[in-house]
Amino acid sequence: MIGEGKQRAYQRIFDPNDSIKKLIVFSNGQAAGELQYGHGKYVFEYDTKYSGSSFEGLEKNMINSSVELFTFFENLIPEYHRREKLLKNKNDIADILEELNNSHGALDFVKYENLHKYKPNYGERKNWITIKNKILSSNTFPNLLDVKIDISDDILDSVSNTEHSNLSGYQTKIDINLDLEKKLITESVEAQYILKPRNKEKNNYFNNEDGKKKYYPYIAVNEHLFMSFAKNELNFDVPYSAIVKAKDVDYHYVTKRYDRIDGLKYSQSDFAQILGIKSENKYKSTAEDLFEAINAKLLNQETKKEALRFYYYSYLIKHSDLHLKNIGALEIGNKKFTMTPLYDVISVGIYNGKSNDLGLPMKQPAKKPINWKMDDFYKLANIVGIREIAFRKEARKITKTFLEKMPIYIELMKDFEKMNPLPMQKTRIKSYIPFSTKLSNMFKEKVITLKKLGIIKELELIDEAGGLLSVENKNNS
Image (cartoon, helix red, strand yellow):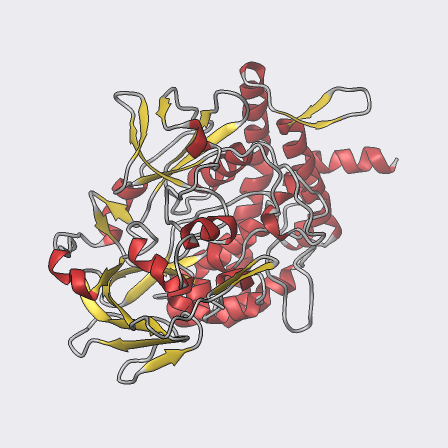
């Protein structure tokens, strides 16, 4: 097999006359090692002069071999239908690697015979922490761009025969240049921005348990909202984001790369890579495994606390698509790592109120990621060495902001819908429930759940939640 996708497999083609292929792997512009593959075997060995961080699952001072492409490299490749496009006319999944000009992080794959053409561009990078505000930029909400998209409909509709971004993941992506002065979006090879086009087709996003394809309208608005809330209300590191009206229906999502600036790349890994788990198994882990990896990988208690804060925020907004590839570690120099800025933050609860609150279950005791109590988060806090009282303080701040500020965002959505209707679910009387109502319903249901689970009381937020819980009281009277 050269790879597996959801409910399908790809056949490896063996030709005894084929020679072993060689790719030189560069990390941050430095030759890290050589990947050889062919005849059903993959071999990786580090360059003896390489002084950078080792790749998870690949040991230094030894020859690493496998019958499958190493998970550290496999996780760089787009998934499912996007991978199928890249695999056309190729005999091995590793053949894709040399085409990954703009995958996440700072890896380059160069054919041995093309080494003389490779010109690394890494020498002038500043420490990421010192320029992160410039990289991430700022945005308001809603940030609706008045720009022209100079990209063909075939590419925007994902019906072209080629991929237009090799950034990993399920959703279609396009590498773009955003010129706000010219009010123009164009495709770009060395892009600091990506565009996720709206999709009119049904999809199996969010690991649906029933496996059925469904239509998820306004994913762009959804992601822009919860990324902006995290950025502007909770002070997480979050890249610039915006939405652009599609010419027929729905919106495109635009966001800035946080691992790129002026053509320079910064190294990062997602936690599927770090844990050595194939991309198709990104939901098949546990919250404990994730936080044990976070504890081992991230720089200090502050960055570990930030990861736990993000996990709790995701729980509040029912981000059940939070899997191993939706959180990562960014290298900031001297082999030290911080949590990546947030990305792919979406409330699945808006589409399905009964969805899980998170993407990964608890291992001991086995527990689905729905309706967790504070004790579940205390367990994760303990893994990363954060005291219960310290996390309770952070959880109270986040919950208080959620209670006070999310109603403001709901009103912003209502104002937005006056000029830009966002009809979602059709009712029996042939009217439509707007996005703002679905958002409001998710919020109210979550507040009621927090009260029933005792979280509102434990965090001493009864007064702040009182008015919001009046809806529950009316329903019960």
